[in-house]
Amino acid sequence: MKRPYLVFLFLGLVITFASGASPGTYTVLYSFTGGADGDYPQGRVVLDQLGNLYGTTSPKGNGGGPCNTIGGCGTVWELTPSHGGWIETTLYDFCSLPSCSDGTSPWGDLILDSAGNLYGTTLYGGSSGCLGLGCGTVFELMPNGNGGWKESILYTFSGTSDGVWPYSGVIFDKNGNLYGTTLYGGSSGCGGLGCGTVFELMPNGNGGWTETVLHAFSSSSTDGIYPEGNLVFDTAGNLYGITNGGGASQNYGAVFELSPGLGGEWAETIIHSFSGSDGMYPEAGLILGSDGNFYGTTTEGGNSQDGGGVVFELSFANGGWTETVIYDFQGRAQNFSPEGGLVFDKVGNLYGVTEAGGVTGACDSNGCGTVFELSPSGSAWIQTVLYRFCSESGCSDGKYPRAGLAFDAAGNLYGTALQGGSEGCGGNGCGVIFEIAEGGAYGVVSPTSVNFGEVKVGQTSKQRIITLKNTGTAKLMVSDISISGHFALPINKCASGVKPGTHCNVYVTFTPHAAGTETGTLTFTDNASNSPQTVSLTGTGTDLVATVTTLASAPNPSAHGQGVMFTAVVTPAPPDGEPVSFMKGKTVLGTGPLSGGSATFTTSTLKAGATTVTAVYAGDPNFTGSKSKPVKQVVNK
Image (cartoon, rainbow, N blue to C red; front, side):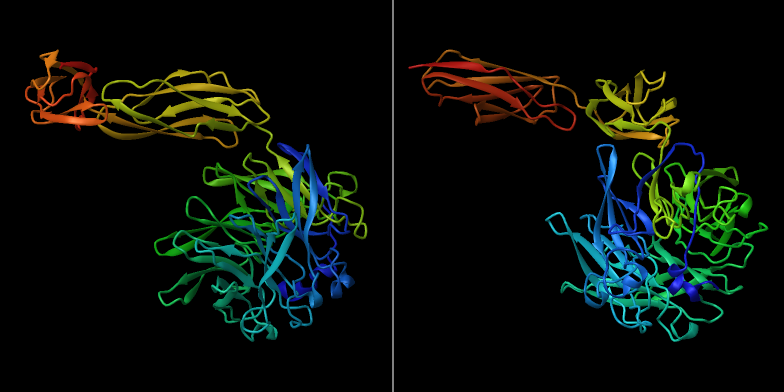
């Protein structure tokens, strides 16, 4: 069991890392200095829609109070792209309020809401309890409109049954409620500090938040203890997470599910207990795959000689859950100890980091960590080490990556390394923010949807142009273009490939075979990292028969007060009885029913002079409407 020393872990944490060759380009975007910008970046990087990066450092910063003894209390930072470089800004410095009521040591992941506000947790601070460190907080950071950010404490843990020390971040549900875990608290077990909780924070309507403990873990042989990592929802609204200890096997940790009941209570089920060969001591939360299965990591265990940890999959079938080790890390021979969580790319490959392994002989001979990719190949998963930390002199490229990775829209990976970079922080380096740029092609289609409107059954629409642009750094080669439905691709100008920064066009048509709305999909399959690219196609087939309306009047000219008959002829002839309107501008002079394609209207009320009259057939579900050319009726005095 690794958790009892966790509270003081950062006091003695000294690590080094290395980097190596990779597909794509590894770049250090920012090296922390250990000053006002903080040091030891924690938590997964989060990106906003503009491509800005956000994260935390802990424990350093400029915070006052008791954190001065350990070099500050942590920060929230932003990294903004600017003129080919990046600018780091400290958004908030913790322990800026008396008694650190605003929290200290933000270790968990941040999240963004749709308005651009940041949410997270601090491990300590908020109150004066919990061994004098404070029991932790949940906070929100909101832009204040003047270029700065304002922190609000949503909840301060008291150190009793509500939980102690939220080690991980929080997540939202669809209603805007927050969910998270505390490492301890909730019960009197586990040495008196409690075994941990799962909690919910719900807006109370008065500007505050109400905390509810959904589950308090116990030290029984059937429950987990010390929950870590972010929670995750499935599509049915059940919560899933991991515990670093406990479980029904060897106290090696567990995976749990919390299911909501009709009365607001939540029922916990341990769906897997780790036994050693299938992994030990998970620290990062699960992720949900597009296949409905969960994926995660353990920092130790497996079947290798060094017990370097595993990547596992949990699948549900026949009323139960099955854990499968999809990759077993080989220890010092390659890389080991996957600390951070996983992330999928758009084609189903998994990415993560290991805290150790990589460059042989570096970092006390354990290696300084790696970035890895796992790609499915049949029933197996193949690992590719994308980067080995401390490949540069003095580990200027960083060492000891512990947090998960994040993708931007172009397929570039972002992450942090806990140490390395600068020469500060006792010579260990204060940590870095890095990017592994996607080194291949990237395809962007425009438009992403096309509506052909109404097209008569059996006829072909006008051609619509669809553009495929390569915004990547390598040539994009299209291996296949497929199209479904009654849509066609008469012209393809993408067959020879697309150089970086250029585009090609294809032309699409629609030929409906029946009346009604039809849909289809245009799919480009290529070597781009975001392949395939798709375009949604829509069109409506119509059986309407086009009509033509003509108009004549007699007698013309006529005498004042004399009856004048207007005769409209609609061809082809619509059904008898349908009306034709005889119009003077926007004024209806009268109507007449069709009979054999003709309709008449007689009037003797026209004023002396010239009156312009038109005939209008409105149409029906099978015949289009039409309007005659105007007829000038002359009435003599």
